[in-house]
Image (cartoon, rainbow, N blue to C red):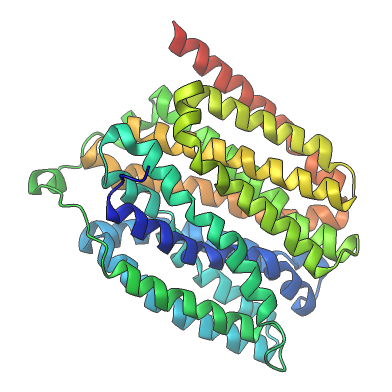
Length: 388
């Protein structure tokens, strides 16, 4: 892992700064939403709008990237994000729930760009190192696990309006990201590959490797987002745990999402991608069993397992997806992959608040079981098919 090129490490540090935004919004978006919204069921709308904005931005971001290159897109989005942070501050000062939701929606462009970092890293190495490059970039999430919530709590009371100072601190992340990405080098694509569009999406999406990778990514993201978004609502607002206790659980969850990345090359070598993804589904199921109790320790362990399960699925599906396309097809396959993920994730984030306030934490957890069991069966079928 340490022999990876400079590009990968620049992307790793930059991802930690970009991802701090999403963790920041997940951590306090529902809390701010609850204080501003006219109805508790809409509390998680700011978080859902971030995901909706991400889904809406996938195709435009990838299109722009295919035209002007990854580096220029990365740099432009850093500047854009600082402007939207200013809009979020204006919304807080005006106590405008819908303007705040608009700002989190517009942050979707930032997130859509960030999710291209893993593909940029894969393009910077040989194909046999794709899982290693992906896991290396994801280690940046370890920094964001601390940075996002810490920025939120540190700047909360700097000004008369709560959390304005938090957003001021957040803007510094994107100033630093701009400086780092200035040194990133886009990989050259030969002219003949740029002009070729490759196979049609209809042909690509019929491949079993694409179906397994896509469905695993959808399940992994949807359930992680659904439970994680509901957690601050259930812990802080319904069960009365302090903001610091809630922050501790969310930080632990995010650390669990990215810490295994340090060991993924060994895990992949030992088990293979398919078995690693099956373990991810099993970890999700255990998370649901443990999370059924409302104690702090159960929330903590459940969210750690949720993070571990997501990591195994995410790295497995990202590496598996690269087997479904060639260089000429990468932008359209990557864009459809991320678009489908974030459309379904948006639905999960938006419904999380409604479910937790109307039906309770237990229903939130149990409602994920059928989807997990179906995906487990699909992965077992895929593993059996590969062995024949």
